[in-house]
Image 1 (cartoon, helix red, strand yellow):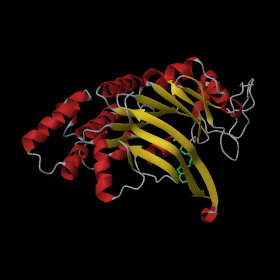
Image 2 (cartoon, helix red, strand yellow; image 1 turned 90 degrees about the horizontal axis):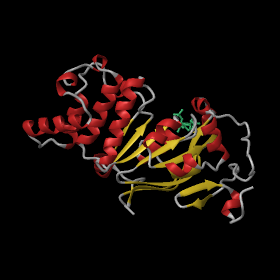
Image 3 (cartoon, protein in one colour; image 1 turned 60 degrees about the vertical axis):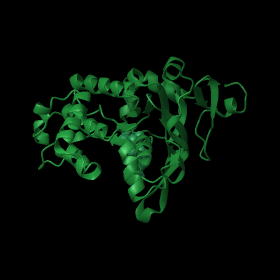
Length: 307
Ligand SMILES: Nc1ncnc2c1ncn2[C@@H]1O[C@H](COP(=O)(O)OP(=O)(O)OP(=O)(O)O)[C@@H](O)[C@H]1O
């Protein structure tokens, strides 16, 4: 099997919240999964389930409270300055609102120039132009239509693709794509999805964060279902979508519109098994129910039958 590009091992994140930070919110709880080269992993869950926090921890935009995140075998949680900059040569993120990444007073291609200043100060003008053209070609953008334009003169899809081109200039191995499709109109959505599929063909590992099950299904080799910060089911997309075992996955599949709303504390209908619920003390742990298919259930974990 291809070795993992990124591996999360029992990663948790606690935020201090409330007046004077006296309360604690466990936003991500003991999360473990991997991403391999040439693989798209979708991370799916309702609003507030901790998806973005996981993406941000992988990109070191938020520090993990515990656990390890390794990239090519190196723990990234402790990287500083130069080492962190080198990490960003290999790992980049693209986020939901492309407009917020651009400074409206500068032309959009400044985001590319900044990569040159930061990472390739010695590359000559001609060679740089060629690299930019290659990166734009990879994301299906015509340089004449996008370079030298202000952000407001470009569509959301073009800005999103320009950000992916920026990442490609860096020869990345990992792209964290956090709700990149959500703000695009239907016609550009499919272009960006196809682009992510191309990146996978080029051997990149892509973490595709989404609350939209159908998008995850379309693209991903692996699916991770997150609920209230914990993984409740994960495995091959065909297994998770074809034979969903956790009541939460089943609920999501049965009522897609629910995903847009923030989770509430209403108890989940457990269906035939009452041992899947996240316990306040943690768990249940994931049990392997079939090859490459894991589900959170106390009973299955003990080797007993679900039910
Ligand atoms: N900096 C922060 N300080 C305090 N709480 C935070 C912070 N960032 C996120 N949270 C909380 O952590 C939980 C998980 O948030 P996160 O943004 O990761 O969820 P999400 O699944 O990505 O949701 P969405 O799809 O709405 O972005 C939420 O309850 C959120 O309010």
